Length: 434
Image (cartoon, rainbow, N blue to C red; front, top):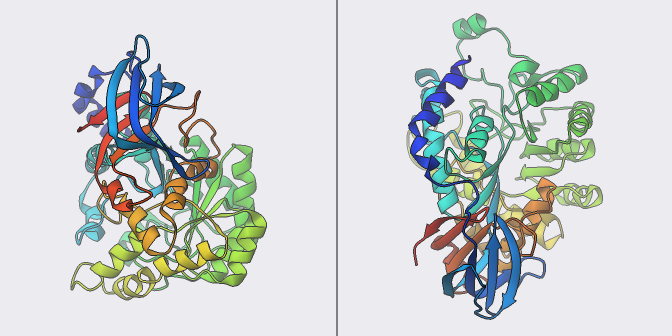
């Protein structure tokens, strides 16, 4: 048994109390919603009653209705929306001034324990699904949640991100010579590639480890212990080898990318989404529209790191100028991308900031000029499209009963998303603060 397996076993044993409720609530319920957000049209509908049975939406009735045999839940002062999806999180970590030393001091056990709390905070904030784009704990956390052992969102897990030597997800960046020589150069098993054959092997390793999605770091990054935050780090041929191999296993590929050239190579190579996209220019936007690629801005992460870069000692000095320069640009990039018709979906890069604060991304999207209705669609029906699923992201008969409720009208006042009163996932109520 690996160290990580032992860690997760300990966490699950500690979380055994969560077993009191089944994954799907047995009791049918009728959610009497004062308003309902129609994710397909982006419009707020008048009062509807959503009948939920065995984890699915059974039917939707006009007005405030009773459903025989179903327990009524009064949400007449609320707007019901489909459960939200955050397409870019890291459930096993959270930024702090100690982040860069913790990898040397803490064990997988520590990160596994932390992930349980982060998962619950995320779910209670209204996010019933997430895509975890890099973290070896995530596939195990996903399984624990699916088994009803831990409370948290549905997880699409990338496992270890794929990088090039010295790239943003090279796990040995910043190691001294003695430690580097002791460990040896990482390879495809560790998610580091330098050839087309390596690229194929790295994807197959992620399949072996149980990943749901592939994440590559197509350019340098802000928080990695390396000088460049935007240099391209894969060839088009390497990206294509990753994408083609991923398709063999039914995987989609998300590409972390800040620099223009790296984005172009990633889109030409066939990735599903560009994450961050800081220096996205008109050529990249045109190429993304041509290829059907999605943009996941992660404005929250940009704002967070730009703010923290002002604090002495929060980031290492090699990171601080990147955080100040790159982080501050992402919100404007999102504004430009929306104006130019690039397809946008919702993601925060949470783990950079504190888990549970994910909904603040909605506010930043609206600040960037993206209509509130479009921002809500980005976290519901559009996110489902990015994931390649059709059983969630809308409140319709036959879909998963993932439903969030906030007081007021979030299309009129997006700030309402910061106060979630009701959370249901797969028909089970996790939060009811009414």
